[in-house]
Amino acid sequence: MNRKRWPILCAIAIFAVAILVYANFQKKHTFVLANDEGMIKSEQIQPLFGTVKVSGDCDTDVVFTDMETGEKYVVGYITSGVSEKIKLEKGKWYTVAGGGNLVISPVNVRVE
Image (cartoon, rainbow, N blue to C red; front, side, top):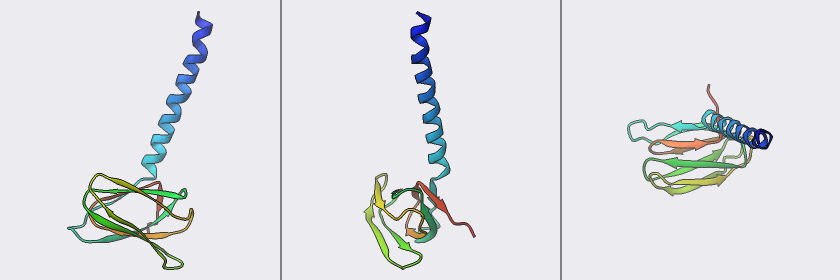
């Protein structure tokens, strides 16, 4: 009976470790662009994959601007608590601008 449980316990342990690693990765690569007295603000981000998830706590447009070409990509009018996804080129730097507290993931943030 003990030999039958061993593979199941190993699978559960591997699954639990995978969840912890994924949660840590998401936490490390999630950026919050905090509200600054109701003003529109911006920051430079770099997508880790081809898709970026954006959510916020107020109604706003979110604009991603390619740092090299100046081309703009817009997530039009997100509402509080609703997340949207946008396809951006992996590895390129973008300026992201919007109102309220924006949560953007998975990205790297440029700190100067």
